[in-house]
Amino acid sequence: MNKTAKRLLRRAPKNILLSMISLFCVFPLFWVIVAATNKSVDILRGTLVPGGYLLENWKTLVSTYAIGPALLNSVKYSVVTTFVSLVVSSIAGYGFEIYHDKHKDHVFAGLMLTMMIPFTATMIPLYQMYSKLHLLDTTLGFILPSISSVFLIMLFRQNSRAFPMEIVEAARIDGENELGIFFKMYVPTMKATYAAGMTITFMNAWNNYMWAKLIMSDDTTQTFPMLVANMTSGHYIDYGQLMLAVLISTLPTVIVFFALQRSFVEGMTGAVKG
Amino acid sequence: MKKASVKMRQNMTGWVFVTPAVVLLIVLSIIPLVKAFLLSLQTGRGSNLTWAGLSNYVRMLQDPTFKQTIITTFEYMVFSVPIMIILGIILAVLLNDQMLKLKGIYRTCIFLPAAVSLVASAVIFRSLFAMDGFVNTVLVGMGILDTPYNFLGHPTSARIIIIIMRIWRWLGYQMIFFLAGLQNIDASMYEAAKIDGANKWQSFWRITLPMLKPMILFTTVMAINSALQVYDESVNLTNGGPGFSSMSLAHYVYNTSFVNVPNFGYSCAMGMLILLMAAIITFVQMKVGDKRE
Image 1 (cartoon, chains in turn yellow, red):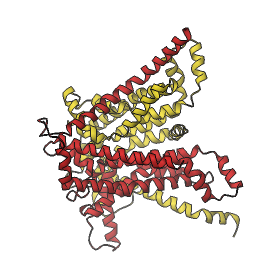
Image 2 (spheres, chains in turn brown, cyan; image 1 turned 60 degrees about the vertical axis):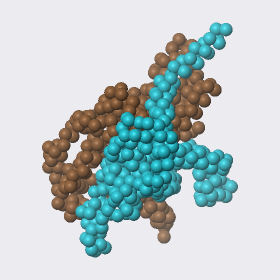
Image 3 (cartoon, helix red, strand yellow; image 1 turned 135 degrees about the vertical axis):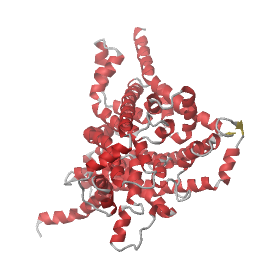
């Protein structure tokens, strides 16, 4: 046996395990594509070949459900949440690290504790507050609980340690004000961290279901995942149409992740350096 | 004197920067928590509430549905979190090998489900395991089953499918955190260990695992917190059924307030219990995590 064959053999178990797990992870998604492009009858027959029925499924989907407004709502809620939350949380993370002192460290430790508070425990008082303040069925209502994210603050606080204080000092001598330093020096330097934060925040906002379901009671304000969930309530389920909707609901988060993948891992890596 | 005032001004700027985030957390997390605790001591329908002491907490002890949902929630946690974490570490270590071909493809495949929303994941698994779904079609077609099996109609299989779905959805997510953690381990540590005669297995136990410990602690706490709050899967995969057998605690809390006759007080009491469990588990994790140092 030559050397290459030996090496291949030694690597075989590893590759077999990885292939099997990859298959387990990808198969349900492959099936979604198969189902979205086939007739319901063929799907029920168990076909595993992508078909040519995509356009027809699309036509049934658009004619049965108002997917346009739901998609638009989801895009609006997620983009606004991501933007506002990144600004508020990153400036806080920066503040906690660059200007840190004993008091701020205590406050930060307190914030860490709030991470443990389950949303299930606070949603009822929040709901009551919302109905009093007329925040139900509003974009502001959707984004409010996600704006200040302890996870993001932590991510930016940790990554700020790698941000050289000399830059801050030099800019101060040049007469730059503190807010200017943050926006002109810090933000452009921390692209990877912003990419990581953006990926996680966008995914969470897009996929947020319980909160959306609770406060968006109107058909015109509902999100796309809510619409997908409602599609399964009938007795007869058109799998082609349903899986096309699932596919559409998944595309935005997949695209965001793959567009930012490289920076995502880099940004997360900086966060755990400690 | 001037220097001191500059320092003070910068210190103030720091407070200004952190204030919006801190205020939002106080208003939207801490105050609602206090209100939830007060609500948990009241009883009544809708907003017609009267003080009731601990009666909501006593009611929990006598509520069979509550007991069922809490057991189910624990099952979701116990059978999904360790598998996700251990398999996540193994995968991250395997994929961290620079020599491995196809590692980009493997990583992408394993991460993909994490980009799918929980609602969509639940709908996919519900369709795959339906009576007329793909799994039954294949099993009957291959002659393994004579008639389709009602996976979502039996308590045990319904819960197992929710657990499988959770592992499928979260495995790649955990793996990414561990991959990030592995990037921070200096390659020279492994070289030094190799010179000292350590094999790969020993390097894993002596270097990789201890260095990953903070990450493992963090991901475990996050995973447990998310398991205690399972909702989307319970609603969209099985709708809690059959009966209440696959209903999660969060699903029951939601229904108690927003589906059945609203009982905010009882819901909040159950919410407090979720908080208590999360706090205890996190505390134990931190203690255990610290000891090994």
